[in-house]
Amino acid sequence: MAKVVVVTGANRYRRVDYLYLNAGIMPNPRVSFKALFTGLFSRRAISMFATGEGLLTQEDRVTKDGLQEVFETNVFGHFILIKELESLLCNVEGPSQVIWTSSSNARRSAFSLTDYQHSQGQESYSSSKYATDLLSVALNKHFNKQGLYSSVICPGLVMTNLTYGILPSFFWSIIMPIMLLIRIFTNTFTLTPYNGAEALVSSCCSTIVLFLGKLWLFRQKPESLNPLAKYHSLTSGFGNSYVEPIKMDLDEDTSENFYQKLLALEQQVRERMTRTERKDHCQ
Image (cartoon, rainbow, N blue to C red):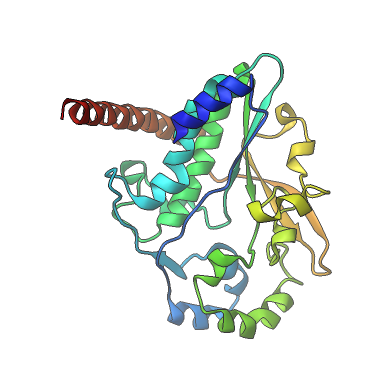
């Protein structure tokens, strides 16, 4: 599919100015109700809801491509798309901007270079979002001189279909007053997709509405943005939305090592696809 997009795009356009990388899944989320009720009335309540740490686990699976489903969807598929569009994104006529939707659930503790697909853990979503943070930093290192700039945004805690898939909707209705109260003390509870899209459009279906004033990041010069910062959509206790850059908890050596591992995986996948195509052709 990526190759079809590139061929069609290359015939119609000379460049790609903006690329949203927003697709993501959190399959089979499981909540520790013990941790939920213990933390709900503790000092950890804000952090627990904001990051999901100690609260959420996921049950991942292997796809027909032989890759972990969350990793392939949230990270590797985007990486391959960028590589396929590289000639259109890297253009001397002006900078292009790649923007990733990350998460406050992206945590260093959930990611490992020795298991970057997170096949041995139960926090595949958190691992994948931390991986996108790492990859964004590496892309800037390798492609800034060619005019490609990468940035990361975080929509905060937003009530979307992904969120409602974690717990029944009636439960969220019950605790919503508590969450609105907590928002007085924290700015990460954006809650609505409109507020969450302050840094970037967080839902494709909201694009028409949100283009009217919410594309903060796209109004900035990409070369002026901090490649080591994540741009957070935040909402005050009074419901006012704003954007704040916060330095990501990562190091550039890990970012580069992860990038090299993705390049090696890309080569393996492409070679396997070539062998499969030749085998099918012979048959």
